[in-house]
Image (tube, rainbow, N blue to C red; front, side, top):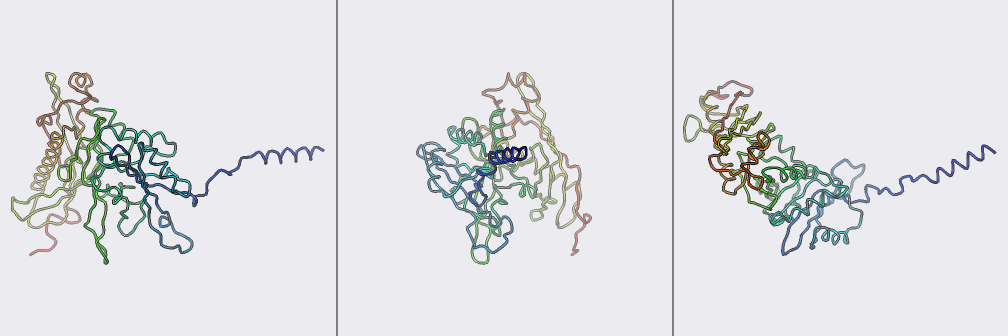
Length: 385
């Protein structure tokens, strides 16, 4: 009798177990990698990039060649309205947990249009704070349809994983939702969002191809979009990051017109010191670098190289700072440095969370080149004439 009772209890417990009945099989879901957002005529225009995982990992058997991604499009008075219109044409469950980036148009960042978008993604239970943000002037659909070089998986693309590019050159610092929110909530309430453009410098044996490129910044404040800092004007921002960065400068040798040298630079540290006098503030910056020399022609020495590096780095910083002043933008977040180090002075000087900046506010830039590494060889030409 006791055995029968135990058997009945065990069977009852097994029947009550929930199991995994509500779990969706991975192959029966669509995975979103990126979202493009535009704003026109009072409506949000949404581009949803669904990626094909067939070429991410090895497959046991041959599969038909499939497109790496498909782009869905819809528009509505709110972003959610557009998404629900798009859901009507989707065959399977949509999984948002693999989403890696949001691509904004300029209009989507104007007049606080981006605030509801950012808020929606932060509230969604499947999305994460690590979602990267970008802005573009080019058609969003064209950018989302671009495949990486050699048809690599879209999960390894520049937009999905910019850290690969960062190891080669830290020209543009990635900005995720967490950093975007922090930057908008703290002085100077502005953030430099990477600018994505279409690059047409690549081609295959069959035809020219297109690739995405990070070519500057779009500056966003809590009140909306403020403008672009493009290409050459943006180069100085990399030297003012707190973290280690890698970049390059091209210097002229011996003041000769045709003799140039490109130097790899590893930026070790940046220190910014606010100096307050009579309710006015100026800033002094100190940048420490290491240099690695590649190929060169003629006779050079470390003093010439150091002098050239210092001159070019200072010029880059000055150009970026002046471009920011023209847009009324604190590109180096100098307001935050004062806020962190002297909050009493910041409260006296600040207006709407930002301190007024002039061309003379960045009063001194001190560039220190610690090491000049000639690479594998000495400062002598490999091939003598």
